[in-house]
Image 1 (cartoon, each protein chain N blue to C red):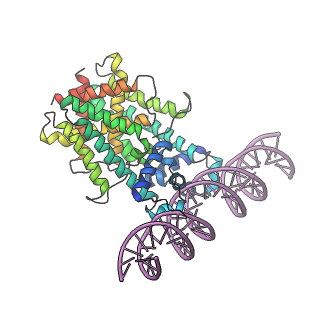
Image 2 (spheres, each protein chain N blue to C red; image 1 turned 90 degrees about the vertical axis):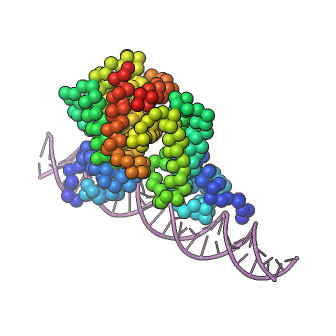
Image 3 (cartoon, chains in turn blue, purple, yellow, cyan; image 1 turned 180 degrees about the vertical axis):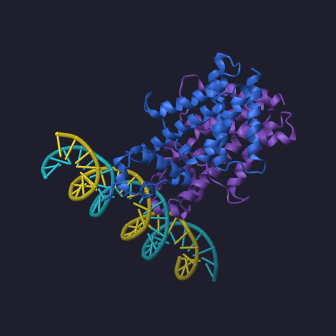
Length: 187
Length: 187
DNA sequence: AGCTTTTAGCTAACAGAGTTAGCCAGACAA
DNA sequence: TTGTCTGGCTAACTCTGTTAGCTAAAAGCT
């Protein structure tokens, strides 16, 4: 038996990539094993099982999303920052629908769970956007939730093909950014 | 063998109720069969299988959501209508998380698919809200998608326990309604 | 009522996915 | 070289979805 030299990170990365390709619902342990060149039970030497795999993929996805959004915002403020963050977030979800889907419904076990840390980093990136607007301290949490709901809702509806009729989706997203910008500036 | 007198509608209704109780991911054919007092294979006399069951639950959910939102809007206009629609939608998702989850990712097979009809009815209910604002014809689609993204995003994040820290969630939702109202009135 | 047809329930059986147990050889350290 | 650790393997089990084929209850017809 030639050793493949796997480790948990490699398994999780392959799982995330596979989830993006075939959809999270079709990510099976057998398929993942085949992809990394190993028999199914061998995966259990690296991850605890399907639920653990899902959590790790989710943590990876949130971390990558935080990097993408955080990086996109660098050097911008106000409307430019908002647009950059929103576009980066949506692009990430569209490019990595499987791994992003893994983030839905998972709950961190504690404050030092990598999942919680990655999620917080993503929130921080959006928080940085809000700093470019004069939103009262008491409204920051609400505004953050609004931004998150908007971006998450739009992106997930789009990947699920939830927008049926013909109007251009990119145009709608730009419209939505402008809408949020006007609202935030008017505070 | 005493006949139970099932029919597709009863199976779907029971499935939707069970999904709300145990979560869509834990809705199993065996569990549903037990719930309706029948052996598992007997379910296949009424629904085509798990995928078909999921589609039917989704159609039921969208239809009920359309009724809830449409009913709530009756007699209101402008901000009152927006608030009524948004609250009714979120309340529905919070009360019926399982059946609403079934709507995510399903695609209608054609224009006369009950799924498409129910989805259109829900959209129409939100469209009625927009009629109370002076939004230009060219922006209606974008505004509708914005409302949908907001409501869908907020509700799904909340049922997934996606809002971590302490600020009051109901308060955030009311803030969000006010935010959308200001933005729509300013067009 | 009696006969036929339909059909909703059943048991049996199978396929596929997740998981565990236990073995064995490759890699590394002394 | 030898011993330990560990990442791979096969075998086996459970649980879920599904199909096939049977039987009796209901429904319809004369």
